[in-house]
Length: 128
Image (cartoon, rainbow, N blue to C red; front, side):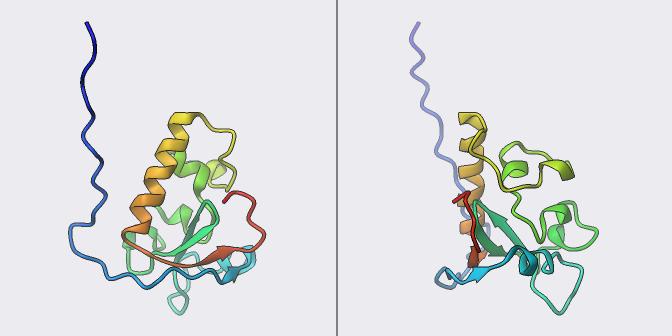
């Protein structure tokens, strides 16, 4: 019997409309990124995925004590792709992952891109 099931398209639209600024391509060093980990209220909280840096300031999940705080100030590509909350998985390398995990990562890029401003690119990133 043929499987004629067509999956529903994923809807990554936020529940409330988000007005995003045009994406920036300013270089952000790993040192700068690491200082934006949600622990200093005078700095933005940033998360990078595939070298793109998103400003997640205001989302308590990425703030100190939040469930996703371990992603703040880092490129969390591998952890997001593998749906891992393990500190050792919070790293930029993703190219060696399975096709399924690469698809999950692409979904995360779409999800973040509809909710958070892109404020720069990790300087020297090789995981774009």
